[in-house]
Structures are given as structure tokens and as C-alpha cells.
Length: 131
Image 1 (cartoon, rainbow, N blue to C red):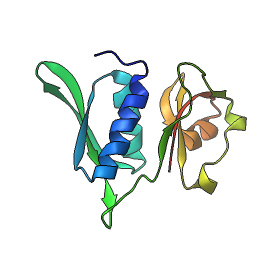
Image 2 (spheres, one colour):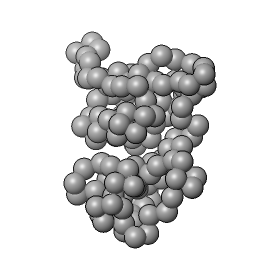
Image 3 (cartoon, rainbow, N blue to C red):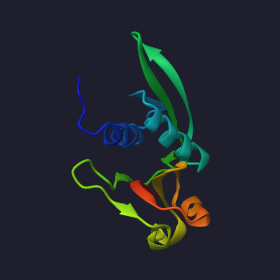
């Protein structure tokens, strides 16, 4: 199976799992997706993740997080797409929902939230928005 945008696929698996009330979801493994999920875990949007194997293929097992039986993530959406990349300088990064959400930014120092990128004065590609 071939994906045009594997990051969107991973975000959609998370979104669909949350809507169905799943405990965890699986996504095909890549270093970028693993780093993306790690940032979401550090920020408290997900419980955890681990690399597993399914029929000899590497997978990421993502543990979803709920609060009072409602998903912690209200919205997770892709910003920069393969057909239209979105880049931003550190000074141009805006707040998501008045600071209640985060942008995940791909920088030359790895993936980080918009708050971390602003504090380090680093710009980059805005991968997704979470709140």
C-alpha cells in the first residue's frame, strides 16, 4: 500500500481512534512519525508510543489519552501538505487558540512545538496544529 502523505495518514488514524474511543491505534513506522508522536506525548496530548512489529513490518503503537471519558485532543489537522508547504519564521509563529493549542514545527534541530521554536528563535515547516 502506498501513501501520498504518511503524516496525514498518521494524524487521521489518531483522530479516528479518538472518535471511536479506542485505547490505542497502530500506524506504519517512520522516524518522522515517531518524533511527531513523541512531541505529542511530551505535550500531554497522548499517553505514549512504542515501536512494535506486525507481520514483520515496523509499526508505531500509539496510546490515546482521555480526560473524563472525552478525548484530550479536540482537533488535530495537517497544515503543511506535500502539494503546498507552509514555512514560518520564529517571529511569525502565531498562538493556537490563545495558547491553548500548539503547532508542531519541523526545524533543523528536530521537531518541536511552536513555543519551543519561538524560545529558541528557530523557524521551519509547520506540520500540524493540535488543540
